[in-house]
Every structure is written in C-alpha cells, then in structure tokens.
Length: 225
Image 1 (cartoon, rainbow, N blue to C red):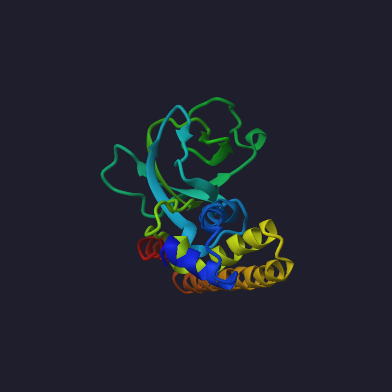
Image 2: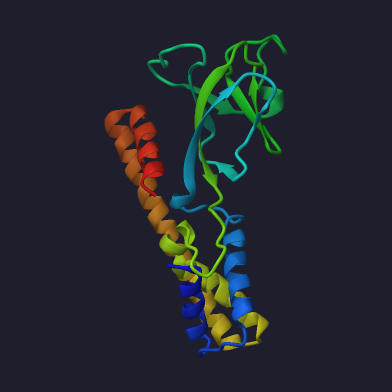
C-alpha cells in the first residue's frame, strides 16, 4: 500500500476529514520511526551482511538496529579461495570477558563486542577475515504520496493504527483514539505471531538438518522479502 493509500484509509476512519492531511502524513512517517525503535522487531526487518574485518573496528551498516543473534559467522580468511567447511561462530561478549590469556595478542577472533556504531573482534585479528551476520535493519523511509516500503506492504494495519492513535489524540477524539489503540494491539499481536511462526519453522529445520539449515533459512528469508 502506498503512503497516500494509508492516508486515505486513516482519514476515512476519522470521518473523511481533509483538514489534517499533513498531520496524517507526518504521523505515518513517524510511526515507522517509532516501530523501528520498539523491540521485538518483525521478521521482515531481518537482513544480513557479508564483510571483511581486520583492524581497526568495523563500522556497522547505517541502517543497523540490532543483532539478530548473539554470534557472527566467520566464513574464511579473506585471502583464502575456499570457505571453512563449517562457519566458525564468534560469540558476543562483554569487553572484560573477550580477551584471551594473552591480552592484546593477535589471533583468530573468538568474541565480538558492539560499541556504539562499531563492531570489534577479540582477540585482535591476526589477518583479515570474511564474516557474515544477521541483523534487524531500518526500512527505506516513505517519501512521496506514491512511495511504498516493506512496512506499508506487510504491516500497513500496524502503521495506520500507530499513526491513527497519535492523530486521534492530537485532535482530542478519545473514542477513536481508543479504537486505534485496540487496532494497534491486535496488529502487534499479528506481527509477533508471524515472526514467532517463522522462527519456529527455522528451529525445526535446524533440528532436522543441522546448523547449516539455519544459515540457509536466514538467507532465504533475506532474499524473499
């Protein structure tokens, strides 16, 4: 659904008012910002990246929200022509627990730490490594009236309800604010159920096929949004 389509739907639920169009547009855009700051995040924000890391720390993607797992996959030494038979897991850890018995000594990474917009590997890598991880990322922002994004196509009910709740409160319409609040709660439950169902499906695949199934399912999800 386009931004204009959601605006028309929301305006209709407010009695076909036309004097608050700008407010509705603003609140629909703000709804995405709010929802992308409110975990748990929906399945359709799940994505991945493959990068190289040596030193200094790696800058996280600009649209990064949160890691999907508490580990990243170490695929190979960058200079190698073949990948490891099984990706090595590099686990998240607090800084004080991330070092080896020889603090500061380079080696194959075993732990990682997120520091602001940086990803740091410990111990300090002894060479460049290619790694892969899954994360939740912000969607493209809605711009003009005909613009669409993943939120507007897969969670338009939540977008409309979130924005409608704020608009109704701004215009002091308590009854519709209550109705939008109920719609928002229901839409959140639907998204949560969809996300849980997909995660359970991935877990069943892991049980049946081993850890490589999780890597494949993540890749499939990211490529079929």
